[in-house]
Image (cartoon, rainbow over the protein chains, first blue to last red):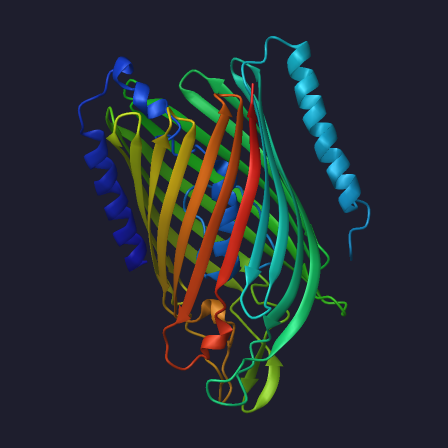
Length: 73
Length: 372
């Protein structure tokens, strides 16, 4: 539970830092829609890599929920 | 029980048919804003004749209307090769005992996303079937747009019900997983994005591997793990454009902890480089992963332990992943081709588990991306 409290504090602090920045205007966000800037640019590559790591390591995920289970690990 | 209803030929027919339907549907309906179809083949081979996996991945996404998106994935994998039994090597530093395995996996997901005001609501379903494993899951995610669309709050939940069997026996057990995520996606500047997620996961039921053995007082037993697990993950990712319309950098860090006594650190970095007027995208990447051992891990046991496992995947280990991917945008925003290579290197760090338990691996991917 101690680790969980630390994780919560850290995530709240990081979120607070991010929200305090000056809002970016819509016309300034053009670059963010580009392929090389989009975090969800290539879900298949992400899914394939995540599955390899899932089969070989004790921890997996962290980017989202809903991928489903597998007998590989 | 082996699934025989869908042969590889049938699956290929379904894939081709799905693609044809998507294309046909697009031509018939001008109201579809965007349709995406991705397919990828992966060849995964561990060194020294260990596990080989050949996989066909497919993904589609169709805008049904301005506010409704249907998406899904299909996966067909063949798995073969040698896997460690969990028993230690008979001589120090020698090869750990392995057993030959062979299986086929069919999996798929289906999701529907609806946009209502500032909310993007997605409900999803997942399915995965192997001869000794069945997984069914459902998920729900709400992505809320705030702060003049500079901030997204992500709230997600997933439930998974798995049935675990063991080939060659009548063994059957179940496990349930409950996963929650709270995340923030924040625009920090015209060229900077930050994502921070906190994930909590509870598992209960049969959490052991029915094929893994362990030595207790020199007797061979099936491994025994606790029947519940609570896991916490903190994930942060920063994407920064370094040269406008040319080069971006993505770095991420994940901290993991579970009540089985393991802590993990994962750091990754990737560059995205446009070349030849955005015709080519190069992606070199590197990932480092470190985990400590579970409380119940050892290479052998004495006395009467409650829990015991010699599965190297819950031992103390470090892994390194080097990757390089090329995307060729043959027709801008319409047709792209992908080719990727990854080298996975793993090492035990406890000084007692045989290094032969940790195979390195090659992964090669090739695919096609269609968009309308």
